[in-house]
Length: 285
Image (cartoon, rainbow, N blue to C red; front, side):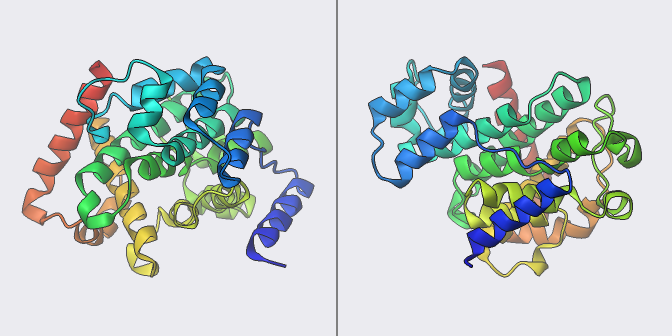
């Protein structure tokens, strides 16, 4: 049994315990399948994306970012694909897919996806600014940002008292405490998110970053995984600071994060301000 078969078996075991790992939406499956078969061209992909208004809106918003180094905002789906590239666009389609697969009407879920979207955008900007050091693309960082806490809505669906036990409240921008999850549910959102990422066949280093984004980078040996976790942790810290939220993990990981990203400690505040300026421009655009 290979590694992916092992993942599928673990997912099946979760289903038997009542935890549902959702399948990829049909649109995502079609695009990824065609990509894997090398049968996807720009026009075909544009036609598929144009069928989903929510996906189109996300693509236009993301590609307004300076992280895509465009001279002129794209005016069509074809221009977006030409700007971003087919493979990179497929990553963004998968990122949209998880929000569609785990959507809901509750205020907590709405705030959850708003937070995830903000962290994903911050992560894509960090990746753009540090690509020469980390070799992580903005699309890869955006994907990791959207998926990094995707285990939370899965566990919310399985356990009616999940928000109460972990203290998750949309109004306070507060999210899961892994230790509370371990003690109360014998599972944590990082592990669930990792299994979803592997089940959806995301890049290995993105799945590893989802699993380890609360951990110190020194536990990771693979460069891409370390860089992705560093990008996520800095994006989460910037988001927390902007919203006046406590982020106790930052003190434990800050030194290794800025070392991995090649940022001098004296330059960190200026770097974060630059990220926020680019982020604000994206929101206002």
